[in-house]
Structures are given as structure tokens and as C-alpha cells.
Amino acid sequence: MTDDSFDDIDDLHGEINEITDNDTGLYEHYRFVSDKGQGLIRVDKFLATRIVNISRNRIQQAAEVGSILVNDIPVKSNYKVKPNDVVSIVMNRPPRDTEIIPEDIPLDIVYEDKDVMVINKPAGLVVHPGFGNFEGTMVHAVAYRLKDTPDYDPKDPRLGIVHRIDKNTSGLIVVAKNAHAKADLSSQFFHKTTKRQYIALVWGLVKEDQGRIEGNIGRSLKDRMQMDVFPDGEHGKPAVTHYKVLERLGYVTLVQCELETGRTHQIRAHMKYIGHPLFNDERYGGNEILKGTRFTKYKQFVQNCFNICPRQALHAKTLGFVQPSTRDELMFEAPLPDDMEQLLEKWRRYISQRDNE
Image 1 (cartoon, rainbow, N blue to C red):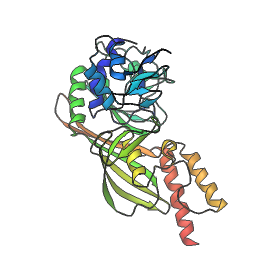
Image 2 (image 1 turned 30 degrees about the horizontal axis):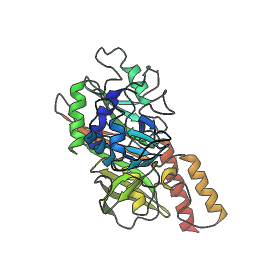
Image 3 (image 1 turned 90 degrees about the vertical axis):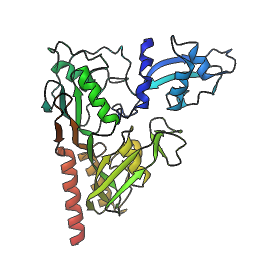
């Protein structure tokens, strides 16, 4: 691990790192195992003596945002390290020393100019390399696409992908081709001036035609692979999602979600919080039959739906931002991918047949 990898702690306080790609949202940057004879010591002090050029204040900031883990559980900076504890620092971006070898992976490029590139990402494509995904990511594909661009270095944090979406979420994502564009776009995401709309199929009948979901989102205190909503504000970061019902299909509802903030798994966590997990979202329980009948025929129908769309039914449909150099307002829209279109048609036929019986 390189010591400078911890310089990115400031990113954890920004809102540009929205929905991450490795589905846990975390990459391990440091890992220490305390000795068998380790005496009780605060974890911030424990880490400050083992990492070069890092202040205890910055370590405490990392703990506040859930980036200090002991035995895979987030802890506060006053946690007392015990013998054989495994202490790690995790962040929502991979270490900078990850080698990026350009790979000729097809990209659906919606728009490109000298500053930016907008890509319609298919479901299943990981955005950033990390544990278990050191090859075949969007970063590798972009590196190949821009391999002849003199100023583009895929390892340079001042360039590249500005925000993120989950591996199994499809849709629009923007890439900055130079440092000026990266700084400008990052500022737009941070100040919430970008426009982002998602389409999701969720379990259950959403009664209200539209609504606002507000509640802090942070790493689950029980399962670090999940994000939880903390309405009392004691944990996590403020998050707001606006939703609008597009179509009701009996036991499921098609909704449009607009992000006011960008948190890891925000739509997935917020929709579960109000009782409507995303359809086939394994991480948040949507891969179970949550609504409907007990009939074998219905169970088989839902299983067929799972097979048609073998991932959370979530698509980043709309992306709007100001072009960093010309200051023109750009707006892009990506149609629903085939798996979600087929899924919706199957539910429409089912409901139509049910209502006509």
C-alpha cells in the first residue's frame, strides 16, 4: 500500500462518490493485525503509529464516516484495540497503485468532446477495479479508448470517472478527460447542480403518486455489505430521494427516482426503508417473492422474471450537467435496457391476464 492512498480521505466527505461499483462500496487500503500481547490502546493512536504522515485528526475523520473497521465492523476512534484485532482502513475508491492495462472492451458512447465522455454502462460491467475485479472494468475500457490521448493517465485521480453506479445497475455515467473537466464536474456533483433520474421497478403497490424520502444513509452497523437508513441522524450522511410513480403493475411498481444527494446504494436503501425494495435486488432482499399469491404458477412466473432480469431493476436514465469549457447545458437520456423492457412487458401481460380472469 502506498502512504498517499490515505490522501483521499477528503473524498469520503464529498457527495460525488454516489453509487459505487463493487457492490460493497469499499476497498481496503490498509490492514494491520495487532500482536498477541497488544495492550488496550485507542484505534486512532494505534493507526497513527503505523501509517506515515497521518494525523490522528484525519484518522478520527475516517472513523466518523465508517472507514475504520475492526474485525470487519465499523468502529469509532475511541475503540480500544485488543490482541489479535484486525484493523483496516477502507475507502470508496481503489488504491492508486492499482495497475491499469488498457483493454479493448466495447463501450456505448453517447457523447464525447475534448473534455468529457458520456457512456451508457451495461449491467454487469464494474466501473472501478478492486478486489475480485482487477481486469475488465470500465476504467480499463476507457483507458483503451483514450490510450492515444497524451494527457490521459488512468491512474491519475485528477482525471477519469467522476461518479459511480453499481456493477449491476445500468445507465449513464460521465468521464472527465482532463483535470479541468474533472474539477468542474466534481464541483457540480458536490453542489447538487447535476440532473440525475433513475428508473426502478420495486416490490409492492406504491400508494402515493410521488413522494420524498429523507434519512441519513450510512454503513450498516450489522452488515458492512449493506447501507442502512438512520432517520434520527446519529449515523451516516443526509440523503434525499424524490420518487414519482410511472406505472402500477399489481404487485410491483415502476418508479422514477431523482437524487438530491448521492450516497452509496441510495435508491436501493431508501426504497427498502419505505417498504419497497428493488425487484431482484439480492443485497436488499428484493430477490425474494415479497408480494403476490402463494400459487405455484405465480411463484414460477416471478422466478421467470428473475431470470429475465438477473439483477436489481435499476437504470440511470437521465444525466445532465454543464459542459466544463463551453458552459452549455447538456442533457442525455438512455433508454431502458432489454432486460428491464422484457421484465416490464412480462408483468404487464401477467396483470392484464389476471384482471381479465
